[in-house]
Image (cartoon, rainbow, N blue to C red; front, side, top):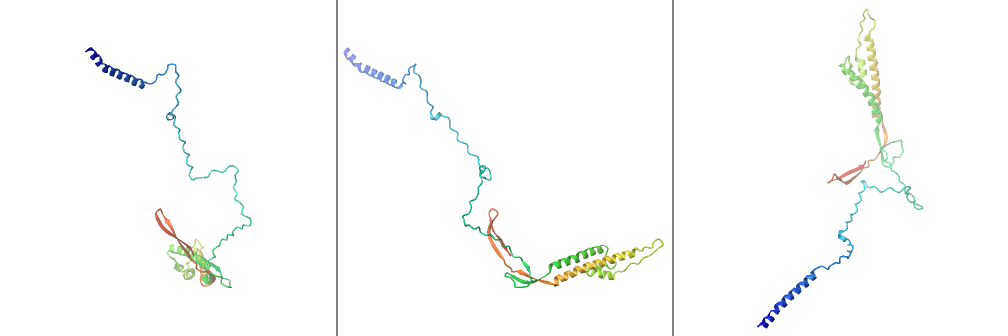
Length: 248
């Protein structure tokens, strides 16, 4: 009976010791290896992740507007290469526009012109000025005085001073004991002199005007040549149109 119980507890004891041994073995494998006290630690190498990041280079500032090329170095002088031997420069001829009119002195009529008779504009303009300026001055003077002593004839150009001189009446003098000077005679002489001078000037201007209108001159006038060109062109930001150009 005692032997049976002795051998009956043996499997339990064996399982206990087997479990304890496996636990110690697992603990020994999990523990880190021991380092001796007198062992010196190896210098640690910095990891790439812990290194300081490299700052990127700052971009270059843009060139100022308007963009300019860098200046040439000191003493630099650019020269165009000489032309090849035998090179002839083209001759540029500026073509001037022919005049509109040319005085005709006889002979054949050149191509592009035709013969015309035109009034003498110089005589017409000068005659109108010589007649019109004194006529306007005399008319303004007598109109401010309400046209006294038949001075209404001055309205007629060129002939007005002569008609006024013939139609006006001279004033008479009244003498007294205190003075023997007649002022009316002086005024009459001054008025007659002014009318004669005015009549001569206006008549001369009228003669020049009549000669300029009646005596025509022969000139060579250029034939009419027109050239028109219609060119499309933008108008504003979004508009479209065209330009018309030409010469006559």
